[in-house]
Amino acid sequence: MAEFDFGNDSSRAGGAESWQDESAAGVSGTAETGYDGGTGSSGMGETDAAGMTSMEYSDPNKISVTIADKDAPLVVLFGSQTCGKTMTLVRLTRYLWSKGYTVKPDTAFRPLYDKNYSEMCENFDSMINSEDAARSTSKINYMLVKVYDRTGRTLCQILEAPGEHYFKPEKPDEEFPKYVNAIISSNNRKIWVVMLEPDDTNRNMDVQRRKAYVRKVHKLKTSIAARDKVIFLFNKIDRTPYVVRPGEVKYAAAKRQIGYSYPDLFVPFTNQNPITKLWKPYNFDFVAFQTGSYSEAADGTMAFVPGADVYPAKLWKFILKGIKG
Ligand SMILES: Nc1nc2c(ncn2[C@@H]2O[C@H](COP(=O)(O)OP(=O)(O)OP(=O)(O)O)[C@@H](O)[C@H]2O)c(=O)[nH]1
Ligand SMILES: [Mg+2]
Image (cartoon, rainbow, N blue to C red; front, side, top):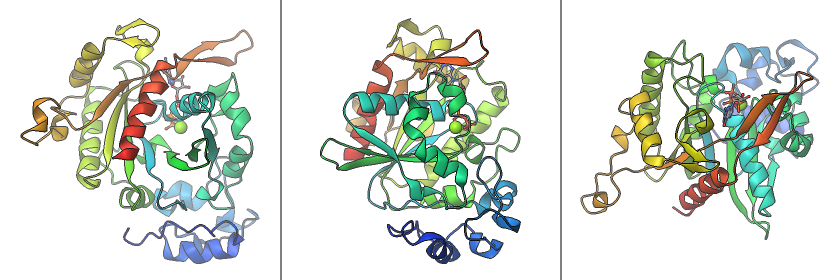
């Protein structure tokens, strides 16, 4: 856990003062910034529309986050900008609600000065249910949600953060920001959902950049704990020729395509166990996914229609498997 305390359960109740105390010992650096106690009215305490201080915005190493629950497994949606992390969270949340789970944002994740975050927490339900989900979620930079079963037991927490903090196409080999490293080394069991997408769905990605993304994923692999699990999520599967009908995907072909698009991606995940490798050649799960379809309505809004339930159902099955270890 190194120098990062990951907060504690009292961080919210204690308000701005206790937050400052904690961050002094944490990665955020907010204590040195002259943080103004959450009024957002002076100097470094001022936040932009995205809810970050100018300090956080210009130097991601100053970003302050708190994972108060140090026990619940942490599912991290890892991927570059616009690969679909936020919408995957939206889709999975809708699915989990339909199955009777409770999914709620964790208000303590960002400091009180991040009004954008607190507003998102307040409007979480309507945001997730919005038919214009793509637009209504465009302000999501960070989101930590907790998933509870019917008895109120916490099953896991799911983290969504800006794609450029995991992979920046123009600076592909840059180190992770401090807070990402703090998450990597936290004691929570982690399930890394590594996002992949078709060759032609992201204008910021080309052959070279996908190779660089592979390097970043391999770097992640060398940094994570042995007990951590990895799920490769091939998003935007609707934009590939591998969908037979909604929810039914030619898995072998889809996986083969990933091998071509992201060369050597799977190599470090080879199962070295002489026995289990006979039926399980790799140490990861693989899921094809579609968050939904996006069509432009007459009024210019993007109408979001969720994809088939099969996709989030399968993702959730793998997450549950990862939680159980
Ligand atoms: N065709 C298709 N498009 C998708 C799918 N999922 C996401 N998209 C598109 O990708 C866009 C970006 O999705 P987001 O979920 O906001 O991406 P993100 O990974 O959170 O991006 P950052 O927050 O910038 O890191 C959406 O607005 C959609 O246009 C999908 O399953 N199919
Ligand atoms: Mg996002």
